[in-house]
Length: 215
Image (cartoon, rainbow, N blue to C red):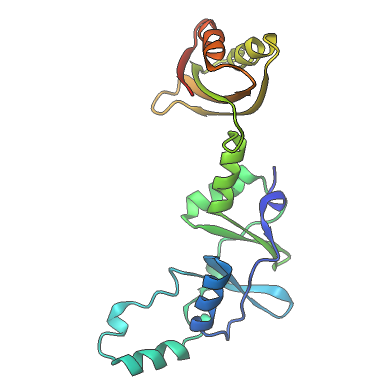
């Protein structure tokens, strides 16, 4: 899975000379929270978000309502955008887990996707959450189970083998190290067309593993 497969292609973009009032209207209408700012040829020069367009109250405290309106209408995206040098970006062929780690490390909610500095897409934290839901079968009916297993070779094969022996199909799965326990691994899987009680019985029969949850 790569960024190119899950990014929003041809995202809504804006020019540096656009007023923040107009940009806010576009973001509200299109229901987006990030706007890549581009120049000719869709080359990235900056990024604005709802947060970057918030004006500190201290800058408005001494102004009356008419002055505030004029002040806001005069502001352009180039005045408030994150400059290109400080925009965290990615490329279309980057693996999704790498892109997610980039977002986490830099504490950002989106990554413009560039091809030779040209904006070809954008991937956001919402895209990542939607992918996580899909990976774990969140939108498909079935029985979801969490199994805690020793962090050693062959343990996952026990689970998949036990399920396949029953003729059942695993259509979603994922795993993560058990919180604060490097010696164990928590595996989540979703199995279709099986009664919950039957799946629970099979999983409980696997030696050395613990069924944490079945629903």
